[in-house]
Structures are given as C-alpha cells and as structure tokens.
Amino acid sequence: MNPVWRWFHQLGSPPYFYRFATRWMPWFGISALLLTVIGMYLGFVEAPADYLQGDSFRIMYIHVPAAWMSMFIYGVMALNGAIALIWRIKLSELLFLSCAPIGAMFTAITLITGMFWGKPTWGAYWVWDARLTSELVLLFLYFGVIGLASAYDDLRQGARAAAVLALVGVVNVPIIHFSVKWWNTLHQGETVRIMGKSSIDSSMLWPLLIMALATKLYFVFALLLRTRSALAEQERGKQWLREAMVEAA
Amino acid sequence: MTALRPYQALLARDLRLAFRRRADLLLPLGFAVLVVLLFGIALGGTPERLAPVSAPVIWVTVLLAGFLSLDGLFRPDVDDGTLDQWLAGPTSIVGLMYAKALAHWLLYGVGLTLSTPLLAMLLNLPVDLLPVMLAALAIGTLGATQIGIIAAALTARLRRSGILLALIVMPLYLPLLIFGSGAVDAVRLGESPKGALLLLAAQTVLLLTLAPPAAAAALRIGSDNPP
Image (cartoon, rainbow over all chains, first blue to last red; front, top):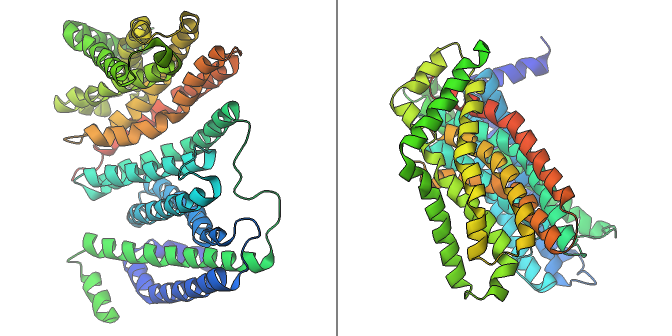
C-alpha cells in the first residue's frame, strides 16, 4: 500500500492517533505561539499605518485570519461529519465534535474584532452587510451543532445527529450568503467593501500571511488537544490507553 | 396506486388526528394574532407607522407560529413506538417524510396563509400587497416546513427540544424570509415581484428535494445504535 494512504488509515485507529497527537501537539502549539508573536509584532509595530484608515486597519491582522479560519474549520468539521456518517469512523466523530467549539471561537473573534473596526471606519458597530450577516449565521450554525450534540445522552448519537445538521449547513451557507447579498443590493446602491481593488503593500501583507499560518497551526494544536482528551474519556479503562499514558509520562 | 397506500394512510392519519383536536389547530392562529397585537401596540398603532412594516411583521409572525408546531411533529410517533415500526418496516422512510411534511404544510402552512388577511387587516397592510403576500407565504411556508421536518427529526428523541429547535431552525429560515418579504417589498416599491417569487420557489424546490432524505437519515440515527 502507498505509505501516505497507510498512514491515513492508521490515523483512524484510536491508539495510533493518541500517540500521534501526544507526539506532535507540542510542536504545533509552540510554532503557533512563535508565529503569533512574530506576526503581531510585524503587524502592530513594524507595518506602516494605512494612509486612509490610520492605525485602526491593524485589527485586520486578527480579524482576517480569524474570518478565514471560521470558514475553513466549518469545512473541516463538515468533512469529518460526512466521514463519520458514511464510514462510521469513531475518531471522525470525535474530530467533528472537537472542531465545533474552535470554529465558534474564531467566528466570535471575527465578529467582535469586525465590530471594533466598523465603529471608526463605517461609523456603526453593525452593518447588515452580506459578509457580516453570513458570519453571524455561521456562528449560530456552530451553536446549533454544539447544542444538538450535547443534548443527546449518547455521545456517538449526538455526534451523528449534529453531523447531519452540519451537512445541512454546508448546503445552506452559500444560499444564505447570496440571498443576503441580493437583498442588500436591492435596498442600497452602495456596497461596503472591506478592501477595494487596491492591492495590499507587501509590508502589510507579510504579517497577515504569518498570522494566517499561525491560526492554522493553532487550529491543528487545539484540534489534537481536544480530540485526544475526548478519546481518553471515551476509551477510559482500556489497556492501550493506560500503556500510552505511561509512555507519554 | 397500491404503492402509495402507506403514504396516503399516514397523510390521512395526521390530518384526521389534527381535526379531532380542532382547538389545537386554532392555537397557531391565536398565537399569530397575539404577536401581531404586541407589534401593533409597540409600534404605536398608527396606520402610517404600521403600514410600511406590516409585511415583514406578518412574515416573522407566520414563521414563528409554524415553528411552534414543530416540537410535536414526531414526538407522539417516538413515544408510542410508531417510529420504530416504520424503521423496521419495508416502507420508504423518505416517502413517509414527504407525507408528514405535506400534512404539516396543509395544516399549518395553508392554515396560516389563509388567515393572513386577518393579520393584514390588523396591521393596515395596503390591500394591493395582499395577493403577493399570500402567494409568497404559500410558497415560503412549504419551504419552511421542509426545514422544520429536518430539525424536528434531529430532536425527535430528545426529552426537551424547545430552544434548541429554535437555534437550528431560525438561521435556516433566513433566505426564505429575505425573498418572501423581498417579493412584497418589490410590489410596494412598484417593481415586479416575479424575480423574488421565483427565487423563493427555487429554494422551496431545493428544500423539497433535499430535506425529506435528510430528515429520514436523522430519524435513523437514534435507532441503529442502541446504547
């Protein structure tokens, strides 16, 4: 078998995943922290102020990576939900459940930082723009997934029910986005653009890319951490878990 | 025609059960009138202030009133074991979902749409907006019912589902609401409501295609994995 495929199949086995997570988690965590510090320094200290927005544009270095992650994590979550529903892989159920709170956190960060940026720039904390509204709906989709999963007494049933909801959300998010867009263009001629056609200068772009990479690494770190804990809880009392914990200690 | 027998039977049963408790059938209408009353009072009750917001208020009211009936959609079938009989039997669950959704829409969607003139009167909705309002509501409630059966199926086996059901359903109602009240707004502004109504219908067709299979999958979750 192709070694990549074999590794992928092995990752579905709880003991293998547990050891893999224990080994790699610190590396992802440390590199995410380092890149965040570098990205923050470059973005908040080194990068020049925007000629139009002044210093308020620097919120972008948190806001934009968080917004990317809010959608990226929903994709990862829905993919794991589909795998859990189709192939009934236990680990995918746990990965699916672990994605939801991380994604909800990034969505909340996006909304809150966006509001702080919107006040000086647009003059209002909230504007009924297509992006803002879809992001808010995305937050509620995350809440729905978390709420539904935790309402079930049985963890696996809860995960599968929430996975159905996440897949319904995948179909609906584009519809919601485009319908809000259509609705807005009907009512107001102007559209609020976060960035126009003007290209971003490289001194401003680099910190953004570094922060985007840092949030990705943080996501992997948080996902491994949460899934590993959930796995330990689900498999408690098993022999392999005891051995793996002794190894790790 | 024998192939459709089980679905017809389910549809007839749901309608008959609803008509045996006629008082329950009128509850959503009572709720809708109460919500309209609250809005009317809060907005000060003057026709000049009510007329521009009457169409959106009616939309929200109808969606809320229909939403209230969702909790009871599958619960009796779960409690008396009917659901397990369906799942064990040879009948297509997806087909049963269509029957269930049709019954729900006939009882609540059509019922609430037909009572809209009353709500419109209370809110001083301009009379020339009423036809487009009724058309949009008839199409939109059919779509809302489809979203409702997914959410009801996902929460059917839970002991309590009230606020969770709202959390699942409300965000998904958004596109229906946008085009539904968009159609009415178009007429108010002197434009053709055709585009909004067609997009509303397109969504409803998409929901009719995808929602019953999703609801069927959701109902199977609780049964094939005994704790």
